[in-house]
Length: 534
Image (cartoon, rainbow, N blue to C red; front, side, top):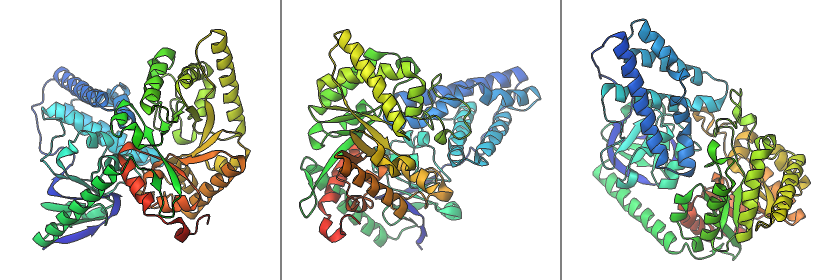
């Protein structure tokens, strides 16, 4: 008899398949050797895991690569293995020493006051298991049966990215959050996902139906239920295909109001997902691909920006200056050991602290601005003084380039509004445009981490307070005569789009894979019936 378990919707769609439960390795064993042999075995396993994560990182781009950079950084840190080697010296087997060392690390993260660190415990568990697989000589390639339903307490982004989702499949998590990084990845790849299933997780065996739209998982679905799900799945795929067929058309609401729909770009791969003519430009191009060795390489940065400008073919391109810090560390640039990195030195705060690095990026951006309509966006701006200081650096850079007779142009200069204080004081910023980063704005305004399962229901962009701030920024932009757009996840959230348009937003920047569905959703909205401007 079929049984249904309710959770929280994280990624729409339906998937039917066999449950594959991902747990810490159980039952595997090996023969213990001498202290030297155990030390060498663990070292080889850590090196193997590090190489596998590095290979995975190299195969990805943008957000996907950033999300697992945390794991690679940990595996490259000798401090992670010190306690395990000490246990081996006392006579422990390599696997016991590693498990004990990682248990202490995971417990430390899980008990942290900061929700961000608690959410990262799943990454540590993934690292633990990767090393154990290498230690036991087991495959570490993430292969699953075609169309499998992944069942786990939580799922690290690297574990998600290691699965081939082209053959179908879905995800059912006991914990997790609809606003987590892995949920974002699932939505971008169209993988049905339900989170927050709680203690019922252990009963998820056999054939499962994951309904990411109704936020439920069905255990042992009946033939009739599976037939209905397949019909609904076919209808959903048809709607998506129809949306893709119309993705080149303008986004007009039912009452004829035009909405600008741009895309977010994290790396070269994103430019292959949709043709440039399908969007109205690039609303957010991330530059977190800049590793420590590229921070001072003006020509390399210019080439990357120039490639993006050529792809856009005359459409406006908004490039965000380096948004390092928080969950995006850069060795030698970001600050180590911050007690709360999300409330520390991030974005423009770091750029102004490293003016030599900042000016290299501004030089490359000013050169690229000579190729077309380029807009520069400053992240994590809190007060007007930061914008003024950044403009000072831009003017100095433009003066230097002119003296050197290097082709350049002054880019449009705007700010990302993601700090509640900046949102409420938007009228005081003399920026050329505002772009609202709803991810951070929501988590800061609601005091709820986007990756925290326990507080996931609080981190909601539809909270009246968050919507009030968005509406205030829109009004401030109108008063100053500057464009206001949204580039956070909310722009691609179909349930949030009506509320955003009602608040007066007329420009949305979304992940490339969500562009067709967002345009289709806009066409179904009648602003007159929504009561615009509430």
